[in-house]
Length: 227
Ligand code: SF4
Image (spheres, rainbow, N blue to C red):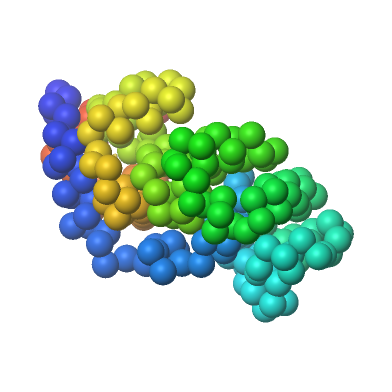
């Protein structure tokens, strides 16, 4: 028999209890340009590969907009190779560097009001909704709700939210209605969701016996039959 889904606030509390002491790569002290570059490099790969590329850029001493813009596409590709899709990602970085150049500085861009900033990001080649919201939240430190595959999987399994295949906009509207507007809390929420999905709520063989949400989780109480 299926358990009744937990209240949203209980999910947030449980995630915090399970993951508050774990490492998350972006904090309030993170360098905004590193956050932007990381948000682009992590597309279609995992954080370990993106971090490896970031480390090479850091070691080369060019993790600043003007310095990176001075490199050729080939030089950027070589440095970010470990993040995969490096031809495309070098072009995406170049497009973002052009956006910064139009504003004069990254700071000027990130100071735009949240709606304008999001629109500017979405108008930039290679930046979709998830990357734009991650940049708004973790680089500009302005309120944004980030929706990713981990969010859909976790809440879908708990029996909460829209259908896992519903649009980004529908998921964002659902989460926005439940979450506070505080940047700190929004940033922590997304971090906890990702940590949970990577450590316990795995795509295959989730570790439900170690999860504080198991007693109220639809998936744990009534797992789908294998195909
Ligand atoms: S009980 Fe299992 S399926 Fe449910 S949220 Fe926890 S890890 Fe995921």
